[in-house]
Image 1: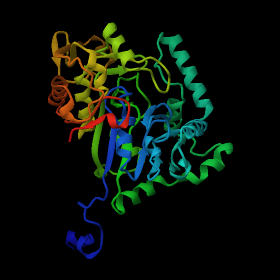
Image 2: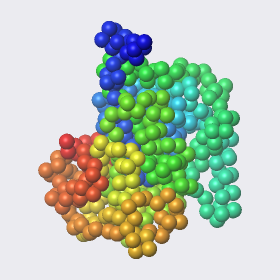
Image 3: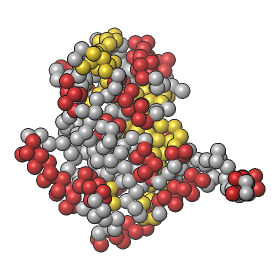
Length: 412
């Protein structure tokens, strides 16, 4: 029997031919240590999307979106929930604290969010964060501090212990009684829902990553990481979609670098530069209220994040924060014992010891916050952007110069 006869002929109404893969999913991911402004980029793309999904993490994420002067804060709900014409999906890879979900929804309802529960789909495979997970999270941090003299700096939202329960097969996918009635209409088989969405009529599907590449459980600065995969692989496993259906992958990058909590941070500036970035950039965590540590842009971590995620393009945010700088430094490579290292070290002790090689660029020293087109940006600001593109090999598609939707300049 010939091999051909084993398969249905695509031309005779049998199986769909392999190259006709259905709708592609657009992905937005953090390319640093989080807090890059992913919510803003998602919000921009969500206005044209039919479905917006979360694939990993929990309410340890924090996205702020400003629409018509109103500031919405999201932790569990996809930022796209603001779009009344789209459906939002919380995938199987997300861990859900139900009291937190309803509390977040109520806060945003007061600001004008309407009918969110009619537009939200929650995977029946997602695991639930219970209050005891949060208690354990807090206790573990206290123990680490007592035992090692340092903690991880988790948000104490119970995310890690919930993923631990899931991995040790003791996790729970069923709701507590008090929330069961409220949540039941939203729960469905999200794998089948996504399959139908991808293989049905043309649809724009958007996935928003939480946290960021350098916080990924596998690829981040372990152990000072989150407990899920916040790189592109988490999109497939956290929603049940094939790699074939991943389309554009946008990396969100702040024009400088920030980090919350402890862990190695090679370009950190413990000086007036760091303080200026912190105050001008209002660098305080949305979820924790902690001050963020600040430093110069680090292209080594961007190249590393690109190795893993294969970014189509970058969205460069908060460029306006650098408006007052006379001179801007950019970390272009690391040296270890006087030798350039071509990779990003996995070992935190090694990362603490690297010497950053900086290139200096002249500042533009003028206000960019009213710029709305590429041509309106000062030439030195344009040069800064081109410098990043050339060194990382990823084009910059958007540049953010302020908080509002219209402050995102689209370049191509």
